[in-house]
Length: 415
Image 1 (cartoon, one colour):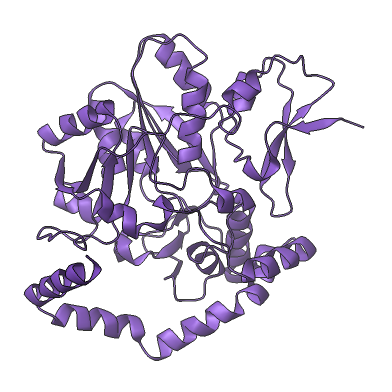
Image 2: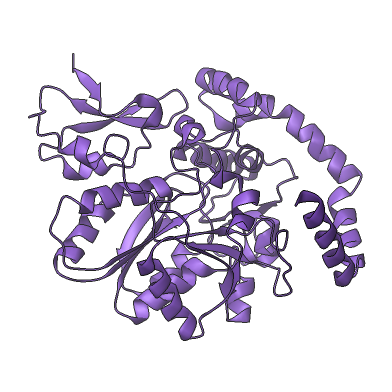
């Protein structure tokens, strides 16, 4: 029987794979949890006790957390591309700028198995695959090792990933003598589901419709990315063969947007706080104009928070080339309204039922159909009463000047 040992506390292992990269004996394996996520464990009989894995692990060797320096409301300047982007489209602009400067850049794409994987490239044409949110766990593969290789040669790299992945990369690079420049950007993350959930869900829909899908979008630009339309396309289709909004009873939409299906470690996230491990943090802007008056673009706007001088120089260079529009905002504004700057996602009670059923059924949709009944009832009420449409119409009817006056009053009440 193999003797296996966890590298860090089990409830803290994010499967970032920093340990896998630095292990000279390749004796680290995945060990699956009940929710079908996994932790990383050492094969004791192969381990030579070098402890490189412990030096790389962000749970055992804590990375440096930076306080926020500046906060901006920002979006890409090109209007047509801006409207096709999730949030303000900043990640795509960062990639494009990096490509124009002959930097390497790492982004995430969905493969033909609907798994999310990192890829390191210089190719501008590959950026389209990195666009749009990926609401599933992303495999780092060999990207850390590739980045180390480029930095050793004195080449510059842009890495955009989740906070736990940025922390892993930063720990790894401390173990090497490097010449190149690394810019890190972390995405505000609420949690990631085990990849098998998405795969099983798409398989369920394929079986139901008797067709195979090749493309999946979580915020399809055809329907305005702010509407979070989940779509699936067959090989030649120009229109989606399956499309559901958040309130239309798609099990994956319900599970993801209600924090029901994240990996267990995500509910204990060490990075869900205001101090960050990256040079720059980007995400949807919540609470825009709530702390200080704001009179600019409000549709598809990103929150962009700068933590280091390196990050500020990078952003300033992009701004000077006219690729992004940005307006300085009070630091506390995005911090107050984005929950992930204050605490990890909180698991609802229905998550326990989902896990119990999934353990028994080993089938995402069978478990979700029973566990998510309460959420589907709420969706039915919303659809029956047309709550979303009525709310949108009412908001549009209120003059902007009145909205701003209300915000001023609310600020005074809160202050």
